[in-house]
Length: 230
Image (cartoon, rainbow, N blue to C red):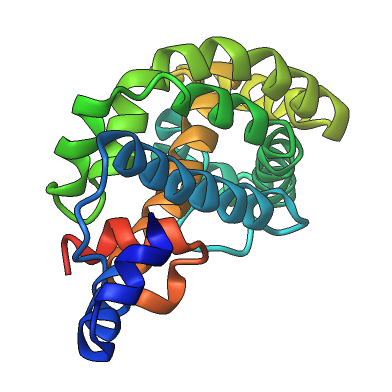
């Protein structure tokens, strides 16, 4: 049937058909749209976790670097004036090392999460803003990611000494007489959410690149899907 169809077409008609296919003008099925968006998210997830999980992936990236918890930041100047500057720096470095280590485990968690995307979700994302896919992923998976990520963060913090270093820092400050504002020594919940936020930030950057830059679309299906919003 395809042979008969092509035989009956003029060269101009065939060229137009090929051009329409390559430019994304041939209508996409609902499943193709969903699959193309999943491919884009998987690409963003892969690049984001790879960037975050290397040494200094968090610590030397000012966009996602994890600072001290807010209660410690409020008294950081006092801590340094007390001669605890090296302990502050050591705690800060170890917190980011913990996030970098845990990020190595994040990819399969994210990939499994995007499998839940429906066709209706996909069409909404396609016509959404520059980070619509990332925000969908954040909205639908954050609680699950926290639950799955927390033990990995705790293990990473313990492994690099962050739990001890920050605990010692908090203990030193909290032992000062007449100190009204205490530092919470528990890092897990704080670092877990910051680490996840950092990954979403990197995923969002890749999504924006895919939407704005055709060369960032690495599969034929992604090219066809995102041509619909160019």
